[in-house]
Length: 87
Image 1 (tube, rainbow, N blue to C red):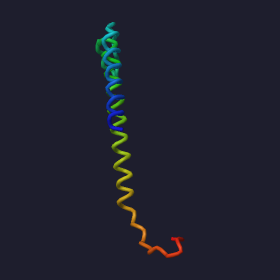
Image 2: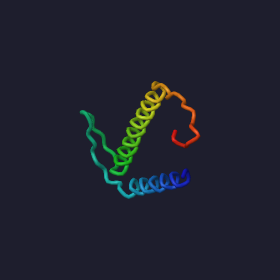
Image 3: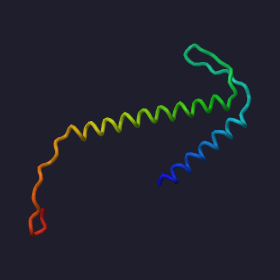
Image 4: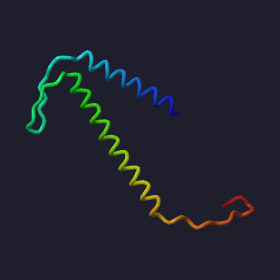
């Protein structure tokens, strides 16, 4: 499974590099009152990486929330099994 995820990640990385190389037109990017000139490919690459960082932050927060919920919940009482197979 790790190899499949690594391969998919490398494929996306290659596609992002191709996008950056093929889109060299200059554009003006404006954000919250600031403005800068970038190549279109670089602006799209920055947007993609920023989106990935936001997803990673949200995923990490959710994992921590679930871990906290799991640790805060008391464990169920242990019941011995019966010999008739019903419990």
